Length: 136
Image (cartoon, rainbow, N blue to C red; front, top):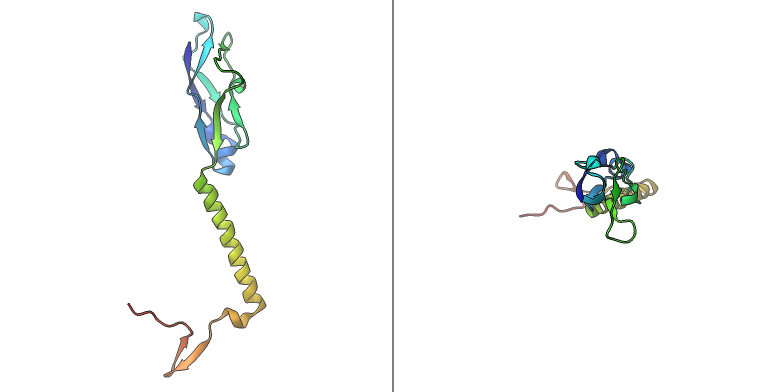
């Protein structure tokens, strides 16, 4: 008989709290065998220990007393996994690159302050920077 899985504590998992991951529910129901008196309405799956380097497998789900998992697949199927979105990874890499470029610019400015400031010219009693205004 198939029983639905109810996922809890995903927002408390290290994957979500520290790494900004999204929890993906690979399975939403599970096949079980039990006596009618032990038949659960649902099975609660605790995701509080889920990390991005690991997935939660069927063997990691705590079953109620008198309930056993019936698997048609070989091995230990995945129930849930945590994935860091590609956009978050790219944003983090961009931030690291930008920090590196900013640090390099600051270091260059400290090493040679004359090059860090644009040259100023006297023209018609006004100071103008080396950049020309663009006309639209």
